[in-house]
Image (cartoon, rainbow, N blue to C red; front, side, top):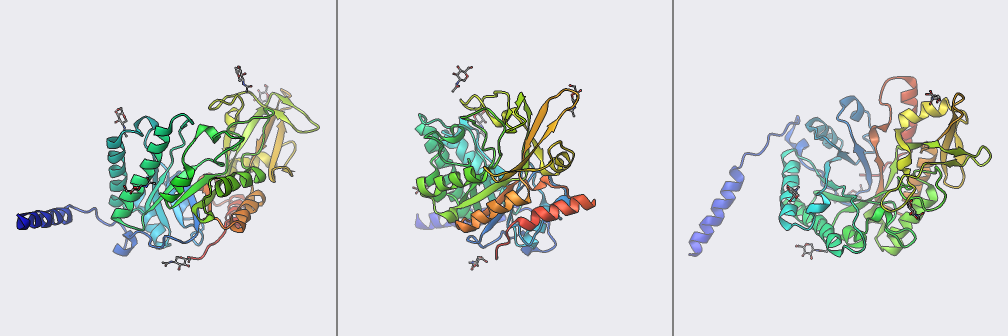
Length: 376
Ligand SMILES: *[C@@H]1O[C@H](CO)[C@@H](O)[C@H](O)[C@H]1NC(C)=O
Ligand SMILES: *[C@@H]1O[C@H](CO)[C@@H](O)[C@H](O)[C@H]1NC(C)=O
Ligand SMILES: *[C@@H]1O[C@H](CO)[C@@H](O)[C@H](O)[C@H]1NC(C)=O
Ligand SMILES: *[C@@H]1O[C@H](CO)[C@@H](O)[C@H](O)[C@H]1NC(C)=O
Ligand SMILES: *[C@@H]1O[C@H](CO)[C@@H](O)[C@H](O)[C@H]1NC(C)=O
């Protein structure tokens, strides 16, 4: 009997090792090996387009992880590993499947297979759905999903990276931001770190329904303090995420004195006014808009971010654009260092112009120069 079991065991090992492994697409086999260091600081960059001219021009002395959003690129995998940077996939299970143990298992297996087959370094879990206070089963199921993903990945390779995207703050005025009542403290213990999305901070506007900063310095600080003090998450479990995009708002009323731009009431998850009234624009689009604008760049001392407004002389209508630039971003990067966070990250790295015009080179150099460079 014992022999038989032993034989079966060996047979399984034999079967496993005989499964056809996908071929390493890099110049050398070593380049297909996932990055090993699991404690170093992070420059965590979300990329939305598999364009070689774009990703080859990132500052690879700084990037530590690239999240490939909507694509999987073997070429980028080899390129990133050559620069000792991780490449990870991104995904989540729909909220309706969360409590189904079999759906979770199947989803985790498929993600793990994708990562192994493509020699990636892990996964970023981008869930973002609402989990109301009165749904503790959903809250638990999301924690389970993250824990089970982390366990499954680490069982295969301890240095696989599993991370979770979270709202700019765990709480605001005793409410969960965007109705995302997740178990943040536990999520931080069952993953490598949380990526704090310190943007879309106007997703639920409680006061005056007016245009405001996408990533205000003090709101960002309050959110981080919420994670550190209220949720009691250690700083090395948090990466500060900043936007390389902004919002353009059409003003229903514009106060030329205060520059207050009243916006349409577009509700989001139970709040009547939100940034859904605006439209997102990439940094590379915003700069020429700013240079051609009525007001040019205005520095807002209350949020430590820039904005500008534009008057349509035909219609008399005003637009206001709130965004981040090298100056406002550098303050946030410095803040991350000052409070000892795991690092910084950007949504998204393709918002810059990676072309050859002098203006493209000037602006992307300024933007990348502000990004911290951590030892590795
Ligand atoms: C989610 O649940 C639906 C309905 O049961 C099912 O058809 C679908 O395959 C599930 N999706 C995943 C990813 O498990
Ligand atoms: C995570 O999963 C492991 C293994 O199943 C389990 O022992 C542990 O209690 C789980 N942790 C949490 C916080 O649920
Ligand atoms: C939001 O709008 C609804 C419908 O117009 C209204 O009944 C409700 O009082 C508003 N809520 C707040 C907080 O203003
Ligand atoms: C300005 O307003 C006019 C009249 O409403 C409109 O046709 C035009 O497209 C607007 N221009 C811009 C740049 O929005
Ligand atoms: C990981 O990288 C950090 C930063 O360079 C370094 O201090 C640490 O020793 C490295 N850890 C390992 C296990 O190589």
